[in-house]
Length: 258
Image (cartoon, rainbow, N blue to C red; front, side, top):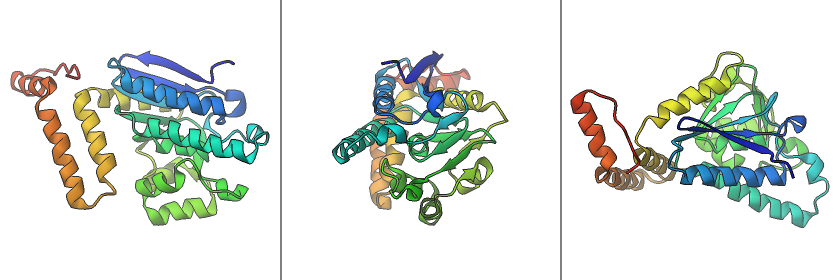
């Protein structure tokens, strides 16, 4: 079968492109599996410092491939849900900063892909929404859990219960997006943001992500303990020594992830 996901490197940034433009990059079983594989590969590759996820053509991702879904039995759907959850968790827990470049519509499972990313940049014309209740189901690949953690419970309920679409400016005001790019420049803006992240020390970046992700929903003291442990882990790294030396010498540090 042809690949439904394309991978290229631009320096330390890896670009992962959902590539089913004839289906608006709808999530087939193959594509969902390849998303997880790409996330694991990027996480394990020391040459990759940050990841950008985008879509080919006019869409980021239209959500589930309903044509494929119609051929599935209930048992098939249950199995597929497990694949969704596993692959999206791999993307969510990637130890490298992950930036979504939302170049067009991102509905249902497509928005759930973006919610697994650490940062989200959208084209001004992009449209987003969790539309599942209009189909008699609910977001099942993390939308009901990740969206409230990003924008708050009340705003998440607004979007999930109405199933409505939001544009880029409203999404920015809701906190769903980190930035809105200039028209037609979303991939370049996302790569620039990812490159800025990639300039940090790899171990420090991974520790910061872990502290934020694990501590956000924990009691404050638990979160502070997680932060302490993550901080202490960076103290014994060569990158920490390099960072201090570079600061003293007024030069750019050269981090090696050690």
